[in-house]
Amino acid sequence: MHSALMEMIASGQTDVGRVRSRNEDAFHLDPALGLAVICDGMGGHAGGDIASRTAVEVTAAVIAGHGCADDGRTPSPAEEERAAVDAVSTVRSAVVAANRRINTMNRQRGYAEGRGMGTTLVGLWRVPGTGRVVVFHAGDSRLYRLRDGELRPLTRDHSLYQVWLDNGRRGQAPHRNIIVRALGTGEQVEPDIAVHDLQPDDLYLLCSDGLTGIVPEGLIQRFLTQQPPPTAEDACARLIGLANGAGGPDNITIILARFVVLPA
Image (tube, rainbow, N blue to C red; front, side):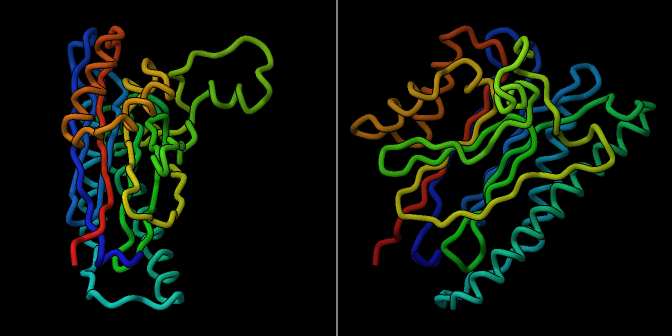
């Protein structure tokens, strides 16, 4: 499905939760560009909120600066493939730039490598001029796709707990929030980046672990597939309500983005 025939309808919300006094999450949403990004800051007094806001701003600015207008022409398979390769390169450059900015701020504040502020990042960007979307992340903020009633994760946590699961659950389980890849904590970061084909009515859920750490995936799927389906804005608010109703131990940030066919 050519992207000129589809548009992104999206909503995003963030909430401090029921326990934390500061919201260290940040998000950016640009439906016209087909871009959505969530960052979950780490560092507390060291500036987790600054890290997440900086990562969102730098990533969005770099991607917007490299975005190109859709001329409405259906691309050839070779052109679509080149566009996807270019988009992946742009996303990688954006994440590297955001990491460099935060890491520099840490060094200027006198923090040693691995110290100071950092942030997770998860995002999607519709490849300009195509029916594809780039999914990218570092850390344990997640992105899911709801297609044909099935909620499927398109990201895999960069956490010590996930490493423990991958290694056969040997020994005692580590704490779930120990992150092994994030922006700002080192001079380099390598985000996971993948390209997926869009289908009409795909629904993408981006969220910080303030949702997934407290609300089971099965409950999220049941909520998103209920009939009649809620609007994106109402669904974000109600999912945040589910997390807060279960104690709200962390900041909660959610973006819901649906790609729909434009009327002829």
